Image 1 (tube, rainbow, N blue to C red):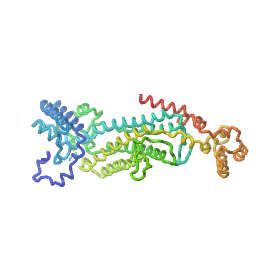
Image 2 (cartoon, protein in one colour):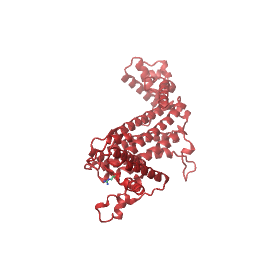
Image 3 (cartoon, rainbow, N blue to C red):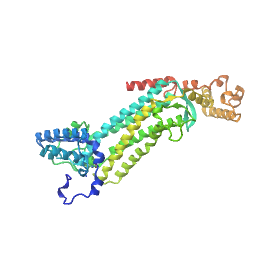
Length: 456
Ligand code: ARG
């Protein structure tokens, strides 16, 4: 029998029960629901709203319910709709009359918002740890292969030589900002809705500040209608997750490309690749492909909650129950992607010779030649034009840039000197990029040390 059934004379239709239930998925909120109820009961007793003995009985009873759920003996009932009523009903079965006092001064509207915020606060920490584990996996690679040179790409075209470690450190920066973003979001999450009641607050002398302190919330939400009526904290959290999966997906795409036969820049461990049921020779980067592919569902869940919320009049509407499955799935997806990608990176080995070879195309050093001219007084635009002319000349003669004679070079670049012929060396090119943020080995070393210290 539903806890709200007092005014009803007919039983809920079977279809309606199935349609409205959320216990099949919101059961995972149980530790947070119980924590919220314990803090609430303590507050009610402290304020003299319920007897202290009843609060004590409620707290003991909730611990018993918790133990039942954790040992797998708790029976979740669809007819009790959601996690809140499942727990409350069982509590009253176990302890009798005092259980009937727990729901004083609260509603499921402020209760679910509280549960979600507690749950997400916890998950924010878990995701941050996993982001850091992924950063550490990238850092270990950067550290181990700190002098490996590869071509850097723009437009998926060879651009300039860079250190492999510099490329990896770019992702470490991105995932570092993802940690910051989750942390910022967690600050706004950490505010207490409980005590807002169904919508308007309570006539009883609740001490919401006390409940907030018990639950480790840094603030109490100031407006009861806002407290039960918004889900912006889920939108914001899913936005953070969407950005994380975008970053994961780009790393995955780099790995897929590098692992292709055309690039052949990396090796991946057998345990982190998969075969084909038909083609015996295949070794596929399925982990990276799935990490890229799973982006779709996380973006989808963000769009779903934005759409669910956009037309809702204040305050709580049952539509909002639709907030949970997408949130849970996004969190599970992001955590599994982070863990699997980090583990896969542990098996990644750069094919150093292939990378070095690809970075040795002298045209990748065309910019270095233009900058040599700048150092010798030629305005950059003019230097760019002259070097461009030289690149065109070499292309027309089907000749690599470093095969030209000084005379040929001078025909396009009048100020060229013999040392210009020595510019086409990827090690020199990389070493010369010393201003902050450049790929010079000393900078990259410093960045590696910086992140090592951050994680120490
Ligand atoms: N299961 C509900 C949800 O997730 C809890 C709040 C229900 N409130 C209500 N008035 N029916 O949104």
